[in-house]
Amino acid sequence: MAGIGFSLQRPDKENCDPERQRGGRYGAMAIIGPWIFAILAFEILRRSLRLEGADDDGLPLQSSIIYLFLVSLVSAAPVTAIMLRMVFDDIHRRQSEHVVTIYLLALAGSMTVGLIAAQVAFGIVAGFPAADMFPMMAASGAMAMTWTAATFAAAIRAYKAIGYAFMVGFALAVAATLFVAGQSGGPQIQALAFACGFASTFVWLSGEVIRVFDGPSAGELRPVVKRVLRDGLRYRTIGFGAFAAAAAIWTDSIVVWFGPFGEVASNGLSTMPFYDSAMFVSRISMLPGLLVFLAFHDGIWFDRMQGFLRAVNRNEALERIMAQSALLEGAVRRGLLWLIAIQSLIAVMLYVLAPALIEPFGMMYQQTGILRVGLLGTLFFALFSLMATLVLYLGRDCEFLRLQLAFLVLNGLATYFFMRWGADYLGFGFLVASVAGAVFAAAVLEDTLNRLPYITFANALRNSRNVYASRAPRRFVVALRPFSLSDLLPARLR
Image 1 (cartoon, one colour):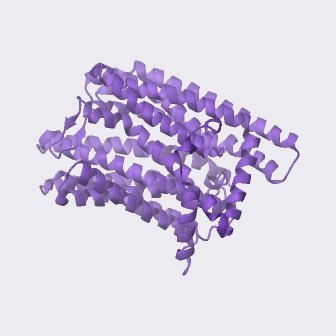
Image 2 (cartoon, helix red, strand yellow):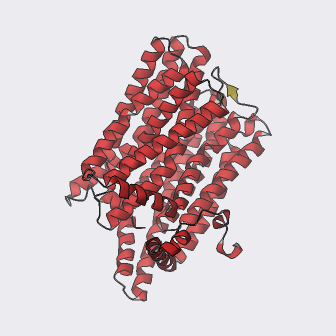
Image 3 (tube, rainbow, N blue to C red):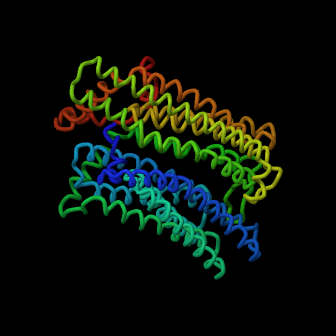
């Protein structure tokens, strides 16, 4: 909760209405742009490699890039979430002198985790030889830093830069990949070229982040590193939740890849383009919901949340705090109703028009069934994701983690269960998991809104105890106790 309002600080510093309106358009560009550019990039590579007579219609390269997206996203998520929370705390305390140093450490951490994860995924699991593993490791590290840079840029609302940076990054990625392919480079070298072109996004967005804040000063690295190690444990639940959220969306694909319907490319990686392409297109339908959430977050949500926090921080009467909590609760309910209405309308329209989407996206008409099931699943997944995000914003880190873990497990088990019934039931696992996840998230969000004042004061008390514990050597171990699986259980069951 300490970070709420930070995302609005940069464009509002001039207090200019036209700037705020342009921010909304740029926000839409930042959300839609990377998805559209990714689709165009994959389609250009697929068609170009087919014309050049590539083996398996470019399947080795496609599988390599898909695995790089998976490994780099999962690697960057926990590091970025923890570091961004630290930045939010600094901004809330109006102490931004260490923000750039924290950002640079976040880049280094994401890259390191990306290298290690790629070594495990490609070297140990996939059994790549060293000549093929090292390019994939370098590509994973570069892409992991790109996701971190994009997240920090979104936090400062550099939406215009995000849209243009991804457009240039994907264009360079396609150009570099086709150049390496023309020089008879292997799929792994082509994937590295794609990642290097894509990493230009990281350079652009890093400049945006560093430009907003003062650069690092000499001698501050050591204390900031100590703080990162301390707060990394303090915010471990957020890190685990971000990791689970990034992994959960891939669970159904991974189960299908290694199931009876998976295809093994010549480089040894298992994928299923028949399933992946339809599900990827179906998840584009989530974009209108994200735009609604962006407008809601930057508008009435921010105003109502600030009113509630001001009432708490000023020690106002309980009746005043409860009144502000009720206003916030009403705003959340209205925002969710708008989200449900718009997302449902989009899902129904695309469900009816699904056959017309097949040819423009380069799919086969046999994929219409998967596409339609994916559209229905995406409707509920969008609701689950945004409600779980609100739960996190309202200070319930453990509940956010539980929701993401529950969806991860349900997505994998349900996909495996329906996959045993045949190819006609592909996608139903994601649909069932999304429906169940939306129901669970709605219940947790309802409980959070009903008890928001109590939760706010309880979190403040716990955080104050952690602060005092960090200053007292005898209680330091208590504040930094290791994560336990019992933390995932409801309080009444511990």
